[in-house]
Length: 428
Image (cartoon, rainbow, N blue to C red; front, side):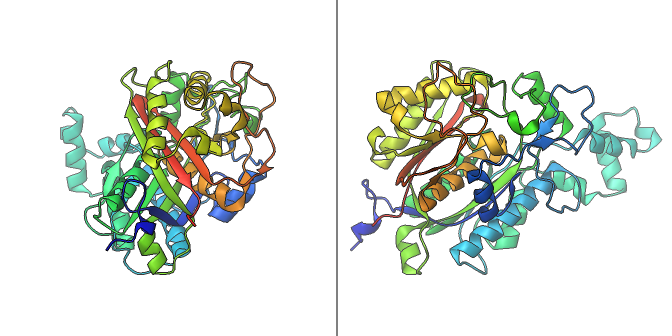
């Protein structure tokens, strides 16, 4: 007979988190990141990876302290995910082959232009007037370039991780814009709930900051241009916010059925209680101003968790620092939580680490779990100019001691990709 202690309100296996790893511009590892985050330290700095002359944005939250064999986005993204997975498995007390599925959120990156030009220039003279694709193929046949090949294969990161850590089955790579990290967690949770596995490895990584990426976001007027000083640029929910700060990072979570975790004596760090995901067809990049899809996403996560708004003690906001998105998120939460919203502490990790894009949902889920484990609410820094149209308790500038047992973490991405997670403390 099944033990109901390990089932949720819908009779599904309760999904526990038993291992976490994280890298952001604040540093490598959960301990260093959490110390810096709760101290209100910013990881935002001037760009040194490429020239910024003539660019309106010259700041970022890149991770430049991990050694990589080739300076491209795929190698960076793989290295970040590898290191966070090593940390997460160690915390979970797992060694050897993982023997469960891998779900990876990875950025939709392409080879950088300098690499494309170099490959095209390698084509023989007879091919110089040919189609660019034919020139690339000819050059690759004459002199194979393994690093470039890795950089053009979207699934190469997950395949390398699967080989390194011994995951089971075909690894899944997904990209749902800024909601990707949360979506990866959702897939891992659903695999366990459906009885397809007792454990799942979930990773989200993004090492894609390049000149091209910066320019593309700048053309959308999405990035902050408040370059000096860099650490003051990201100011979610403030009146003088003007855009997000592009950043890099990664996070890995080990998910297990609670029954399996308890049986092997693992320490339970928290529970993924509810998931919500809704599509928004309003615009390719903008969220619907009325917040309808975001409202539905938050409500779906609460319903999936078997909870109501009164059960939530803290919100890890999407909080990008863009004028439109912050206002939309506030309106969405107001519609769900009503007047109680003013009483719910909320903060945006992006005020310190920037927007880690594909990795954001998983990075912020790790920090949400750490909030419950430590009884410390991270601050929203740079909150010095209150926006009178947004009435929130953003835990301004200084951390706060508060014990919470249920957190909602929001991720609202380009293309109408909306996801919310309800995370709770270990059940009694």
